[in-house]
Image (cartoon, rainbow, N blue to C red; front, top):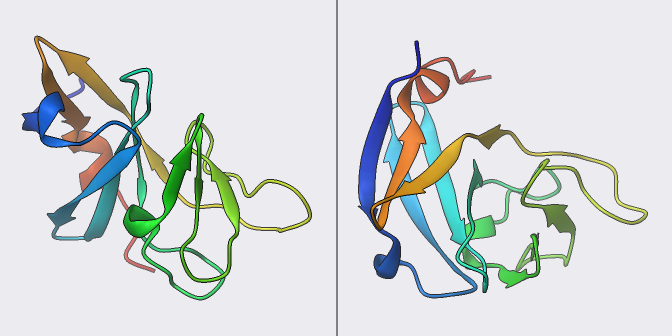
Length: 111
């Protein structure tokens, strides 16, 4: 069974922006696209640990602010010649509120 937690209003995140949700297992970046889609990924780039929440959101991708690696918001996979990926977490919008899958966050590995 999935347990969803309300982390705030969709309008709290600007279009093409992000916010960080701090969990016991680490920080999760919640992104809002220009089309009001919401995605959640680990906030840490695997290349140099850059904060993806401070990156540039374009389409369904985010560019790391440190070394310009580009990640799919849908899959967490690095795009182009870069190799790597970041964990993704189920997110949805209901009634203008952003919900994250708390069950998935609790299973997140601390490794």
